[in-house]
Length: 317
Image (cartoon, rainbow, N blue to C red; front, side, top):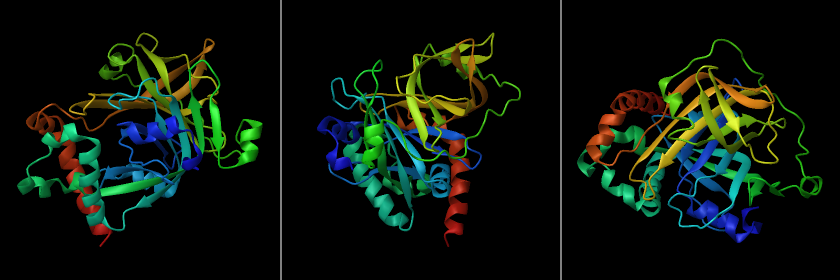
């Protein structure tokens, strides 16, 4: 259905440096990470990728192909006042030819992120980074597309099923939805960055039809209350109590630096508003401005990812 979308929406898919990918794990927990989208106008799918050493996105999509891609950060795209776009679709996991995927990633990432090329390790030692350069692709076929021209207005809806466009909402039957799990709040020092370094973040949850839904919201860390306040959600968002994920990330226009983390917890109504009760904070891979700083910042994760990649290769024979 992408070929029939407005040209400015296709330009968002093509030109944005990052999109926020949401998958849903076996417990019903939505998990959102920033990834780079690969798309050319008219393509049937929007492709994203993950390293063999951190395959959870792909594993979750293999078990539950219902995913979402939110295009909410235009930094580095060169587009002026682009719409915010949410894609809900089905993901196909492509890991049958890791050599071809690695070659494709080297070519396409150099085209899309030329500023990041200088951070690549020298060819002589790149083989030690197989956990990163051996790639798994997810081909996301859009089934429903929401387009916000303004956060204060209802989104335009484009759908593969015309009856849903006419009714203005999903006609899919309700599926499993994980209720708030409760339990003790976990407060991590990085939560203080919400509302300061990160005035907005991406909130993801599972909508009644089983598709993940994601939107960028204003956030404020309220440490005395041990909650994260959710401000001004966009019109048309089907918020409901349940497991949720809040992802904060930022990158330089040429992708010479990138930082991110996510917090998982319970989305609940409190005193007439929405809050996230944090249960777990997870830091992601972060890009630093120099090769040495990049290695130092991710050294601990790299060892873990290397072990995971070895297991994944052994499992694939």
